[in-house]
Amino acid sequence: MVRRSDGVSDLEEALAAQVVFVEDQADDTWMIGRTPTQTLHVRMGNFPEEDLWSLWLGDGKWMDFTEPPAGWTLELSDDRWPATARPRLPKGEFHE
Image (cartoon, rainbow, N blue to C red; front, side):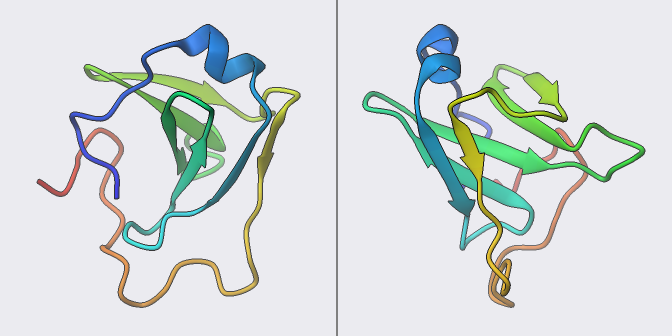
């Protein structure tokens, strides 16, 4: 579950890490990946109006990308997000 207070504490480590992202079962269109030291939250964008992916950095900042860093895998299952997941909000808005 992503929160506004979440963020990336070490961007260099995050970008260099081998990370497999999977659907966040609590929040529609969000994915979660873990490095040895932090949890990363990526939002699936409303492509093509937005970049395909956005990494939530925290403090109102995003890293937008279409191609993920070399060590990242963003895996979408056939089922995607469960019906119980909180609905998608506009970019920058969070369920609080």
